[in-house]
Every structure is written in structure tokens, then in C-alpha cells.
Length: 245
Image (spheres, helix red, strand yellow):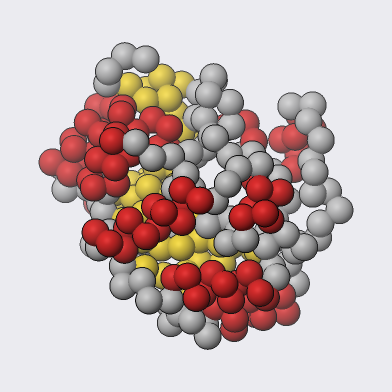
């Protein structure tokens, strides 16, 4: 890959669900997790996507800056954006020069010097914690949660602002004991600003059919209001800023 390009899957303008305020959301290609409920299964392969010059993304962000207001900016999601950490570093430096607020939506499982530098540059991280119980996490994602938790502790140590995002999947990540374990793990974190409960949905299920893949959670129904309220109440025993996204 040339030095000043990144591989982009797609863009979303004026997004309201991926960080504070109105945001330009850049979905990057490639992911190291295999979440059973993945809504963007077409972003998982490292191949594909569009090679995009970082200055083109800077131009897009600057052109939309008037809409961002005081809180908004640009969010990099995926896939897993830290897989392209080396390429994102010069882009984040350029965005900082332009006064653009930056956000990374990450599973926190990739760790190397480039990722560490990238996290030092970003204004806020949306950290996706899929499950606190590692056995259930591996069932849900086919990967360990060890580095994700270590990354969270790193954020708290260095004072990096982050939000914790938790997808509530019935029968997989909605167990009371696990939510309480998560609460105990993070309740004293001073750099954790917000908890976002993301309802499980099947909006990406049709992509599996297109790609000739089986959707593993076909029998799992979307959350009821009661399930979401119960989870929110549990989280609120440990945190003050809990939201259902």
C-alpha cells in the first residue's frame, strides 16, 4: 500500500451514532474479529475496498467542518481501523492541523507501536467490549478479549477519553453476572465517559445471503424494550452516563 493512502469501505455523512455531535464516518476495510452478529460482514476481508488518498479524506472533513459544530468531527470505524494504524497516523496528524475532532471506533484488540501512537493522537475512542467473560467472548467473536481489556486499562492509565460500547445479544451477552463483572471491572475508570448499550439487530443479515454465507444468529430475536431497560438498570448500578443507542 502506498504511504499516504488507506483502504476505505464506505463513507457516511452527518452520522449521529458514532461519537459526539454530527460526524463524517469513514468505514475502513478489514477486521480481525469474526463477530457472529456482524452487520458489516463485507468489511471483514482485508482485500476489497477503495484505496483512498488521505488528503481526499482531509478535504472531505474540512468541507463538512461547518456542520460539525463544537462537538462533531470525523470517526473511523470498520472493520477494525487499527489494522491500518500505520497509514492512519499521518492522516490524524493532518486532521489535527485542520482542527478536526477525531474519533476511533475500535475493538481494542490490536496492539503495537503504531496503534499506541494512533491512540495518542485521537481525541476520543469508542471501545467495543463484546463480552467481559472470555469464554463467551470467544464464542461470540472467535477471538480473546484479553487485549481489549488491557487496552481499556491503558486508556485509563494515560487519561485517554473513551466511551464503552456494548452490543446486547440475547443469549450471548445479556447475562446479569457478566454485566455485573463488567461493571466491577470499569466502575472506577476516570477516563470512561459514557456507556452505550447497542441493541442487537439483524439489519446486516441480508449481506450474508449475498455473500453466500450462513447467518449464525438467525434464530436470535431482537431485544425487547424490557430487555434493554433491564440491562440499562444493571449498568446504572455502576455508571452514571448510560445510554441505549
